[in-house]
Image (cartoon, rainbow, N blue to C red; front, side, top):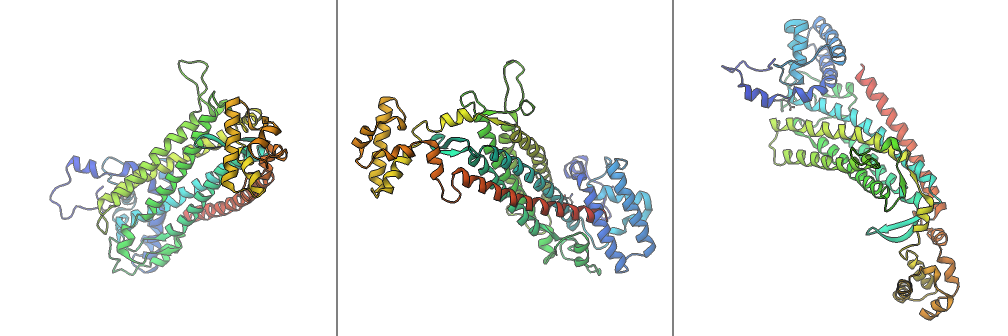
Length: 475
Ligand code: ARG
């Protein structure tokens, strides 16, 4: 059903209708559209812009429609243009002309962005809840491996030994920043646009503050032109998702490498692996690979929306309809990916013996020699040079650093006495890395506990917000 037509002599061409139709993707805004219609109805009623008995009829019909939408008894038909027109058709079918009353003082322009904000907040909270679970699985896994040494890398070359718990826990800090960004986004997105009308506000006595409060928004718009044009919250959400995708892709890359025959560090559980249709022996880390691959579309969706918005004139332009599909796709992608990655991490076992044997390889203890000399006040450039000589000697004689004899060490630098042998062990090296945030296992354990505590606080905060959002939706 078209919401316009009075001034037209003919309806749109089929190709025009097909191009402009959005109900096949914006139908998922229906529950939010109904809820915001109730808020608008309440203002019309409060300010006597609608008769009491009509308001009651519309309220009951909206409730009925909400049930029918959720059960699938009411669905869009071919002639519906978008979610708003489909729902108005539903109301009109129930109530006749009274069903069109809600359009007073409201345009699809302020309506669609109100719906989209509500949808986004609802789904962002679900993503936040899943991130909390992901954090939980990373931090629990990290706790298991606090005492397990492994090589730490730069340039994918052995650099310095680290606690493998430290290696795993680093990911939790990246997702903690994402959760922080979400929190920030939630407060900036919690702005109602209802009352902005098409662009200029309304001559009817509406009450934007009232509708904002009714819908659980913290604030109401300050400039009606901005209110209907602003899609910063869509762009910012897509940036957050691209960032989360980026973080997931780095986990994906590590897991894929670690599960390879060359590394053989990670044993990914069968339930989180897949096979090959031709090679019977294969067990592939597809969850990790998909996590890595999905990050591409998350970045793509951000770029799509930013490109649509670039140089877009104010106020509403139909280009803005292009905000929804990328946004929905990113929400869906993450809601699909996050639980699988969480499960993959929770069920992966790592080979401690292999990682520990690899830890000192590639002369990863060379910095210990340089630091040993630096502690004896040898200028670091000289200390670095001597440690380098130790590496060169080992390389030419096919040995590891801890296999150098006392005489050889002395001949490289007189201050390289036997004391250095004590630090030329992985456990010795790990214990000394006590700068805060460093890899000494005792510190790592404290870091993980702190991160778990913070995650618990976030979990409570998110579930409180989910509860209050669903209470608002059920009103
Ligand atoms: N389907 C439209 C969208 O998603 C709704 C707003 C239409 N407004 C208009 N003036 N044509 O943006």
